[in-house]
Amino acid sequence: MPESATQAHTHHLDQFSAALDAGTLKPVRKMLNALLPGEIAHLLESLPPTERELVWNLVDPALEGEVLVELVDEVRSGLVRNMDTAELVAATEGLEVDDMADLIQNLPATVTQKILQLMDYRDRQRLDTVLQYNEDTAGGLMNTDTVTVRADVPVDVVLRYLRQRGELPTHTDSLFVVTRDEKYLGMLPLDTLVTNNPERTVAEIVDTSVPAISVDMPSIEVAQLFENRDLISAPVTDENQTLLGRITIDDVVDVIREEAEKNIMGHAGLDEDDDIFAAVLPSTQRRAIWLGINLLTAFLAAWVIGQFQATLQKVIALAVLMPIVASMGGIAGTQTMTLVIRGIALGQIGKSNTRWIFYKEVAVGFLNGLLWAFVVALVTVVWFNDLKLGGIIAAAMIANLLIAALAGVIIPVTMRKIGIDPALAGGVVLTTVTDVTGFMVFLGLATILLR
View 1 (tube, rainbow, N blue to C red):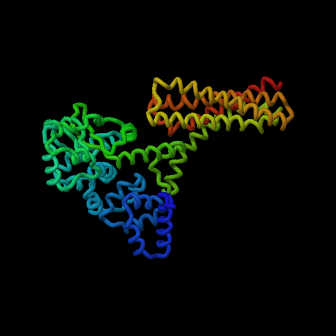
View 2: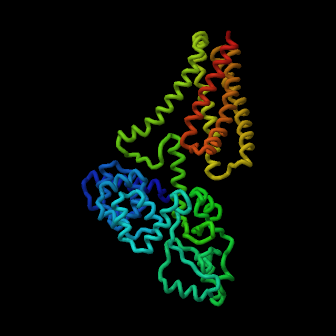
C-alpha cells in the first residue's frame, strides 16, 4: 500500500530526529537536500527552535529562497532574523515575481532596498506591479511572466517564436491572445496550438470562453473559480481589460491550504501562522487574550445561574442536569455555524438563500430538540423519579436547540456583514448564547413550576 503524504512526512521527521540525536550531520545534509523546498519547509515547521536553526544551516543556499517562501510567517521571521544581508539577497535570486513579492514584504527594509538595487529595471517594474496590490487579491497572487501573441499571427509563426524562446514560464499551459495595446482577447492552449494546421491564424483557434480575472478579486474567489473551471492558469486584467499577469494552480493551492488552516485555527482563536514550537511567553500571551474573553462570558453564565440560587438550593437535581442543556445547545449550534461558515467561505450563501438556510436549520433544531428532549426526559424521570422535572428539562432542551440553530445562522451572517471573521470570533459568541439561554430557560422554568 503506497505511503500517504502524512506518513512520509512523519517518516522523514523520525529519520532527521534520529540522525540529529546521533550527531551525524553529514547524512542529515544529504537527506535534507534530497527533499523538495515545500517538504523542507514542512520539516522545519515540525522541529523545535534549536533543532530548526541547526537544520536550516544545512539547507543548500540555492534552495533557501524557495524554502522561505513556503514557510508560515512566524517561522520564516525567526529564521530571517538570524540571516545576514548578503545571505538574504542571495536567497532571493531566481525567485519568481509572485514568490518574491510574498517574501520581500517580510524582510528588513535594508535588505529589501539592497535586493531592489540588484534587480534589473524590467524585473523591478514587474515586482512593483505585484506589490501595489493587496496580497489577498488576484493582483497579489499573480505573476507577470505572461507569454502573449497577436490574433492575426499564423500558427506557424507562433511555433517558431516559441522555439526561439527556448523556455517557457513554469505552469504554462496556454498563451494569452492580446491586441496591440495589450487588451485581453482569449487563451490559446498549447495542445490546441501544436495540433492545428500551421497555416491557420490564432484568431481562428483562440478560446474566448475563459474570462479574465479582475485584479481586485479576493483570493478565495480566485480559488473557487479555478476549482469550478478546472483551470491550470488564468489571465489577470485591470478594469480596462489590459492584461497584467497570470495566476497559476500552485498559487491557488497555497490559498486553499491557508484558508483551511485559518478556519481550523480560527475556531480556537489562533492565527494560522502561529508556530506550534514558538516560545512559551509569546504563545501564552496570544492565547491569554481569548481565554480572557472566554472568562468574561463564563462570568456572564455564572451570573445567570446566580440569579436562581434559591431554586438550586431547593432542588439539587437541577445542578446535576443543568450542564446537559447547555452542552447539547453548544454542540447543535456549532454544527449549524460550521456549515454556515463553510457556505460563506465557498460563496454558497448569499442574500437570495439565507432565509431558506435559516428555516431549514430551525426545522432541524426543532426535530432534534424533540428527539433528544424525549430521551433526556425519560432518563430524568427514571433517575430522579420526578415527572415534572422530566418535563422541564425536555422543554428547556427543545428551546435551547432552537435558539442554537437560530444563533448558528445569525451570528456568522451578521459578523460577515460588519466585517468580522466568523471563523475567528463566532465560537465564543455562540457558546455564550447557548450557555446563557440554556441556563436561563431551564432554571427559569424550574423556578416557575417547582414552587
